[in-house]
Length: 104
Ligand code: SF4
Ligand code: SF4
Image (cartoon, rainbow, N blue to C red; front, side, top):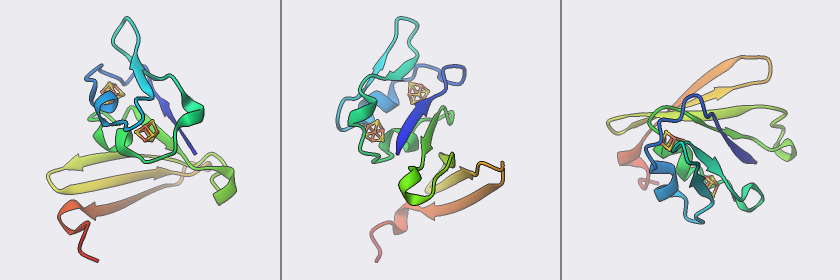
C-alpha cells in the first residue's frame, strides 16, 4: 500500500500535512505536497480523506490483490464517498456515514 500525490491537482492547502500522524508529507517550494518518506507510510488513509481536491490516490498492495487498483475520497457533509478505480478502469463508489462510524 502506498499513496501518490497528483501535483497537477494539489492546491497546496496543507491539510494532508496536518493529518499525517507520522509527519511523512512535506511541501515543495511551490507549496505542492509530496510524500517525503514513502517507505514509512502505513496506509492509515488520513491524508486521503482530508484532501479536498482528490489529489491523493491510495494504491492497494499486490498482497491483497491490488494490481494497480487505487482510490481517493470526497466528503460532502457527513458522507464520505470512496472512489475506487480498478486497473481495467472500472469505477466503484462506496459511501460511509461518519456519524455512524463508531456505531458497531
Ligand atoms: S496514509 Fe497515513 S501514514 Fe501514509 S502518508 Fe497518508 S496520513 Fe501519512
Ligand atoms: S490535502 Fe490535497 S490539496 Fe491539500 S496540500 Fe495535500 S495533496 Fe495538496
